Length: 143
Image (tube, rainbow, N blue to C red; front, side):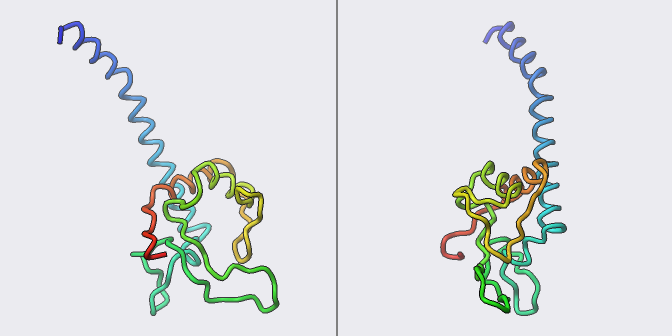
């Protein structure tokens, strides 16, 4: 490699590196915001995570889906299982973001109770979707 080539690559690296680092920092902040919303505001783990015998969420199977232990008093459309949401199985980040903004699945159907019909802001929906996408999807055997 010539000195001019090395100099050219160094200049490119100096110009691009701050943008790459800024993007990585921004993505980490978005995921952290999503984690906060999932764990402390929306409380997704209450239904989407299996619980241990002592009633605590099984952190080894965090957001991998669980059978719901409560039922409505009167007959109504009702989900009896909370699906896995770790890794966004079956959804793209964009579809999950839209779902969290509108309460509608990609096929246009509403979520079944007891799932709340969330209306998150676009920024919060993106953060939640980014966090969920960052998690490892459960193996088919554990679902």
